[in-house]
Image (cartoon, rainbow, N blue to C red):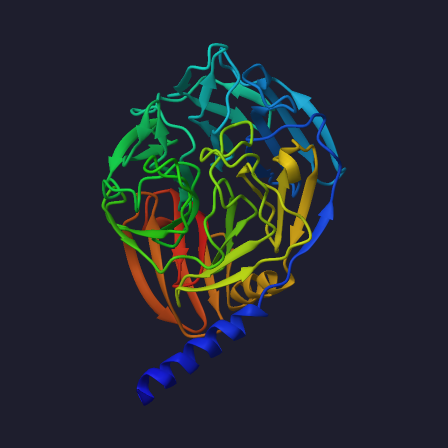
Amino acid sequence: MKLKYLNLLFLLFVFGSAQSQFQWNWTQMANMPMRTSNNAVASFNSITGQSYLYSFGGIDSTKTSSGIHQRTFSMNFLSNSWTEIAPLPDTLGKIAMGANCVGGKIYIIGGYHVFPNGNEISSNKVHVFNPNLEVFEADGAPIPVPIDDHVQCVYKDSLIFVVTGWSNTTNKADVQIYDPALNQWTAGTSVPNNFNYKAFGASGYIIGDTLYYFGGVTSASSFIARDYMRKGYINPNDPTDITWSTMTPAPGGAGYRSACSASGQTVFWIGGASVGYNFDGIAYNGSGGVQPDTRILHLNSPSNSYQNNASEPFGVMDLRGIGELGSGRWLICGGMDSNQVVTNRTFLLTSPSLNLKEEKLKETFFISYTEIGVNVHSKELMNYQLVSMDGKTLKTISLTENWEIPFGDFPGGVYFIQTDNYSQKIILN
C-alpha cells in the first residue's frame, strides 16, 4: 500500500511538473487567398534562408463535393504574402492528402476524390513539386495501395512512411514506404490488423528510429475517434522492419485530423477534433456539427509522458499538415473554425520552451566543414553514430571534443550524424 502511494506521488509529481512545461504563442499572419480546409500543407526552407509554406488542394467554404479543388498556394514567410501557383496536376480536386519535403522537393501523396453522385475513390498519385522553380514535375511511382487520410512522415530526411489510412471501402493496416531518390515503393511491417492500430485521420512523426501516431477514426462502431497512441520502432539496418506497440492513451480524449510535428524529443499535436466527421464537418455518429479542440497535446518520447494544453486561444480542425520553420516556429493554414466554418487564416506558432530545448541540443553538438572533411564538435560526453541513407550504422564513437571524418573515408553522398537526442544531415564529397 505504501509503495503504491509513493508511486502515485511520483506520477503526480512528473505529470504536475510537465503541466507547466510548454507555452505557446499564436500570431495571425496574412490570410490565404481563399478559405480552404483539409488541404495538404508542407514547408520548404531554401539554402538562402527563405522559408515558404505551401497548401495543396482541399475543400472550399461550400463544404460540398463540388467545392473540392486542385488549387495550390505559396506563402513567402519573410514578406508575409500568399500567391496562387499552378494547380495540382490531377483530373479532379482532392482532400485528405499528405505532403512532405524531402531532398528539396515536396511530395503530395494519396487523398481522395468525391464525385457528384457521392462516390469516393482513394488516389494512388504521388505529385512532385519543385519549390525552387515552383512547378510540378512528373508524378512519382503510383502508391501500391491507394490511400487517404493516412499518417505520413519522413524518416532521416530520405524515406516517406505512409501508415494505415483509408482505401476506398475500409481502413488498411499497410505500411508503404516511398524512396524519392529511387522513385520506388517498398512494403514495411504492417500495423496489427485490428482497430487499436488501423485508423484514418490520425497523424504522427518520426523521432530517431521511432514513429509515433495518435488518434484517428476506426471503421468499427460508427467511425469513433480514438485516443490511442501507437509507436513503431524502425530497424535502422532495415527500415522496412518495424516493431509496433501501443502506449498509454493520451489525456484529453480522442484526436482526429490534428497537425503534428516535433522538436527535440517532444512530439506534439495541434488542434483537431475529438469526434470523427465527414468532409462537411458533420459527425459520422449523427450528433451534428463538430467543434474543434483548443488543445496542444505533447508527448515526451524518452519518458513516455504527456502534457495536455487544453485551453489554447484558438481551435482549428481538419488539418492535414504543418509547416516546420525551425528554431521553435511552425505554421498552420486553413482548416475549420468553430461551427465548421472553413477558414483562410494562417497562424505562426512559437514555443519558447521547445526552442530552448532545441537550441540546447545544437549548443552541445554542431557540425563544421573543412577542406579535408567534416568535424563533429561536442561539449558534452555523447555517443555518436555515422548513419548512411539506407539506415546502416557505419561507425560509432563517444567523444567530448572533436571527431573528424575525412572525405575519403566513405563514398560521397548524404549521411547522418546521430545521438540519442538529435540527428543532423552531412554531405561527404
